[in-house]
Length: 317
Length: 65
Image (cartoon, rainbow over all chains, first blue to last red; front, side, top):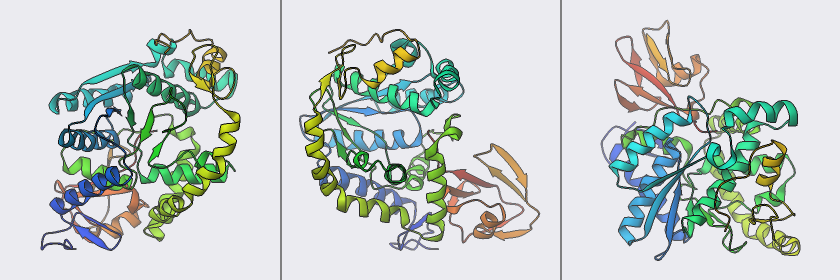
């Protein structure tokens, strides 16, 4: 198959178009830049923190955000969380350090071990056996908390994540299957803008890019991001939804785009519908760490307590 | 022909002299939307024909957790 724009051989085909290498890179960069501009994800005066792991999504989003920030004179740094997953995170962090050095990006690394007292590898057995908690649940709560706290401590006004269209379609379907429609109101290309001054607004420049497009971009750009799948994903609900959506996509190309585009049409209604309830609940300050939360104690502190971990060392602001 | 599967980090032998990318993925029961095909270090689409002398890789697009 040839490229839709020139005579060269195509390396990608999707949604009625096919692209050669150079036109695919042009398509990818243009679509990400348009997403940033259209949804005002980044603005002049922002201090941008890119949450990154060294995997293909985060290297692609770090590269694209850095490109955008350099063009518009916006300050940027990278932040990585070392959960302590041997044979997985240590490899991706090595790739990340090389990438940041090459692209002159300042990198901060914070770890579960330092901030919560132990690695995920050590925590997960106890979490599964004694508390019936999946590793992804523990990891998700600690990661979200640590990303927000660290970004805020480092003065960030925006927290960029590498979530792509597949992630968003999966999250929407997972919330829908579980009957958690209110959680879908918290999705979208930009979230947390007006929630609370202790939350750094989260933005997703790869929001409309497929996982396949993101991997291809990283591959064609020559980023050193070898295949690395978290060893704990076999236990996750997300993996089931991911595989089912990919099976549907192969029979009905464009299905994942359809899910996210349909979701974007109803997102303003969902936000409006759940806004009132959120305001009524209002945010309180966690009695242990002083972070914003809906109850007396935030989820991360509850989890620290349940798992018998020491109190985090991060400066509580 | 020899085919390298990145997700499993192993090479397997496929008893074919010539095969299209689409047929190869069907034969291996691999979902096309979750992989990228590489032939002799070049990314190709599934309409490409592979022969025994080609270096074939099937890269997985999923990662993370």
